[in-house]
Length: 219
Image (cartoon, rainbow, N blue to C red; front, side, top):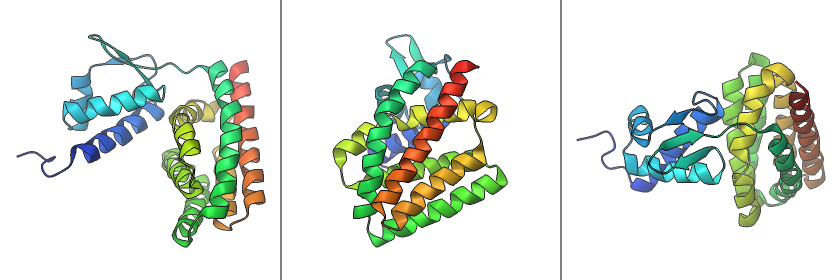
């Protein structure tokens, strides 16, 4: 009998994805390093089939490269590519913020307010891992509340790369309290149902992210 007994394959694949994505985004699995499917399955204590499914999802998001018969390579961080990603992210994220402010239900608005409070606490405590987890939660909730599956799918391809880049460079060129405050203001705008304010907060956040990306390019 294993700890996975009674757990569906889909939920195990989701769990494998969440855990591997966090290991990659927080650089525990460093860019450019190679790993085997078996090593990763053993590390997560999850079977190889759900791990394989999660790796294909991570490959679609650009976080890993699957090398047939050779293993799994954690993708490198490309700053120039990150700037091109931000061009797309700015437009889609503004749409999602405005739509979420308009379409979120009462439960989602409460969750946005909770995330904003958590972001401000993470800033006060300089808790970068806590911030990263709240950022992921904000991304997922915004996409769901926007009620636009096409925008959600597009943003889903960029979130992991964006969070990994921020985690890699925030100590050198970024400011966690400022970043957390900008995320909190976005969440607060959506919670208040103010589409214009939410779009402005999204643009302010992307201005900040672009500035630290360009600063990283110069280092």
